[in-house]
Length: 277
Image (tube, rainbow, N blue to C red):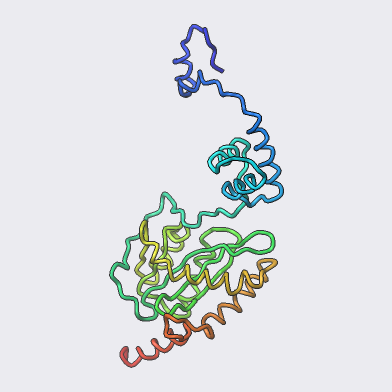
């Protein structure tokens, strides 16, 4: 590509090809025999345990007597184009063209149902892959108001999950979510705007606002998904329907003085009826 000794200088050729001048004259050194052995072994290990990342592969190589560090293993993995096979969906990536909503939960005491709802997305595994799960949670009572499963990350299944509690329980005062593309989509924002809900979006440093939904994910996975497993989406949907009923109606919460989410949610609403009248 670069012709040395031509009428056009090497510097000019590099500029025309949009290449770094220093890289033009760089001659890579030969790969050592030791690295060739390590790369061969890494490739073999990749076929046996494809979910191991650099730290675990480093330990495997050390067990076999190779004196190698994690950074060097990472370099060799990069050189032979291998990486750990794992789920890496980025569910909270904001869409560039969407407008981010303000943060409205600062110094707010959340102590009654329908004051603040929250939502987030996780990805429970099934036998041959994983699905996306979204839930709508009432923060004060921890009640799961709705959930939906999907095999894609489009906004429609999130909007469908939102429509159910809006129709069943009425709108909350505020809704909290992160800046994931589903939660700043036109469909999601329009649904909340039409219901008269104030939209709050957390940002950098506000991880704690999602802690209630993240705690729900921990319960769902440890108490249902990982205990029983599911072969497909139909089985997962049936299992989650069963678990959400248990979670709302029977599962006591220490933070709620060992009451259930349904008890807290409906008792508070009933107590508020005479005041509203």
